[in-house]
Length: 132
Image (cartoon, rainbow, N blue to C red; front, side, top):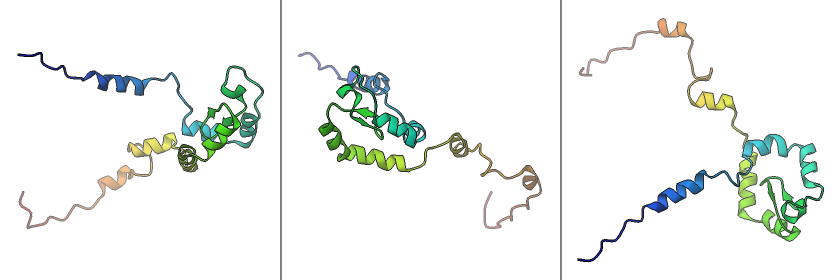
């Protein structure tokens, strides 16, 4: 009898580990909307001083995607790409706020009725056809 083949289950753990890594964490959409797209901050980001630590000396920066590129040609081709266009479309939608998150969880003010209406509510009509 030959050796049984091992199951290759370690790939799932590897993928979860890679997804949870924060080594190359980018900026979130709400951070870009509130900070980077402000006209003063955008002008400062587009005209950065020379930085020898960044790709392309920090001169080719896409504000919407918060990425540096090596050359101007790479930045121009990035602007034409689907990735950039998808990111711009996502940035047009308003960012979620804490109030939106609370409302979605049922903690907001809009979805709740005052306690006085719960007590004085009319009783529900009883349907005679329903068997209890």
